[in-house]
Amino acid sequence: MTTITEDIKKVIDMGKSLPPDKIVGGLKSVTVMEGKENEFESLFRELAAKVRDHDKKCYYYDLTKSEQPRTYLVMEQYENKNTRQQHQKSDHGKYYLPFQY
Image 1 (spheres, rainbow, N blue to C red):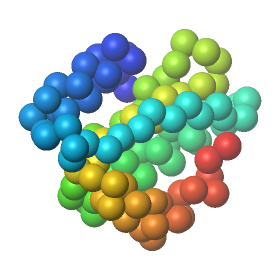
Image 2 (tube, one colour; image 1 turned 90 degrees about the horizontal axis):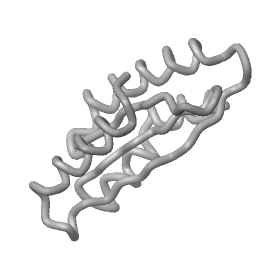
Image 3 (cartoon, one colour; image 1 turned 60 degrees about the horizontal axis):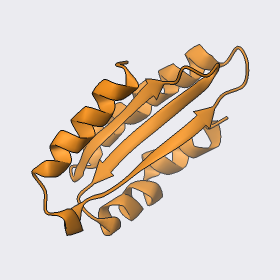
Image 4 (cartoon, rainbow, N blue to C red; image 1 turned 180 degrees about the vertical axis):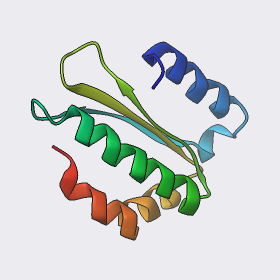
């Protein structure tokens, strides 16, 4: 994991190479149950690997640990709205959704 500032800079730099109407992304804050941080990080690594393998129009998908206890930021960037919706409906997306704490 990198720092929030480094990750946000990566997203901004990637977005500069795409037309503004093509960029769809999000930043989600996730707070996990106490003692489940390692499990959450492991599951996220699995999910991120599947996203890289299957969601070819997802340009950025990463996790950053917040300064707040047990809190993470998930950052994602897709080519367009349809691509993001496909990610949300994918088998890997459906599998990992229940594991969000």
